[in-house]
Image 1 (tube, helix red, strand yellow):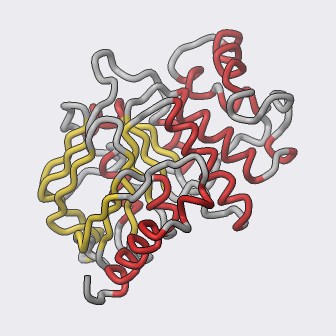
Image 2 (image 1 turned 90 degrees about the horizontal axis):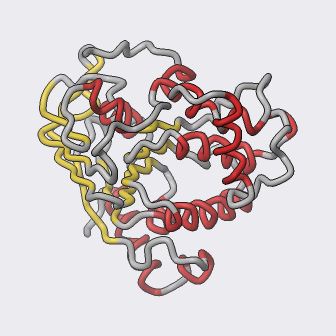
Length: 276
């Protein structure tokens, strides 16, 4: 089924919010010879990527190289011009859409909803009643550092708390694959570091297959098991790096270790087009 490339951003997140199909937990992602273009503008050209079940795969590259487009293609929001994408055994857009939860850069919280109702929206869209959805979401509020803010409106939450609500909504969709597009881009440096550490813990507690798009090489190396560095548009793989200490509980110790510093320098050289 061809998806409308002009689908509003709000609809894109909520379109992926529903129960995952039976038999698809821990689905892996396979991308083979992927090509995509907007008219004459080629965004992805001959891309081959695989993400194992429960692997966190970081995707970094220059602005405009097609990283966000890649997430939309994987999530079934766009159809490729060529090549193949498989998510948990599903190749058609409808099947990929059923297995992926897409979280865009903006949190897209509904301002007239409380935090609990925003978090529970994926469950409501999946057919759960209001009381049932609230009960399931409320059970996770303390673990997500949101206890006591169930009734708060979006405008009453800090940037970090809004992102936690948005991520909880994504997680509650029950999808085996999470496509996270710059989830912390709008946050200040201190809050961003705190959220990275928090997300590392959340993914350790509830493992999923994750595609994480970010411009921040340090963030990618800290949160991911493996990092793919992409070229300027059209996106091609420049280098792949194994994270030195993925999702370590102590972020500061992790990002200052000699192994991490070396990996970061290799990634930066690849981005700059220098020697490997």
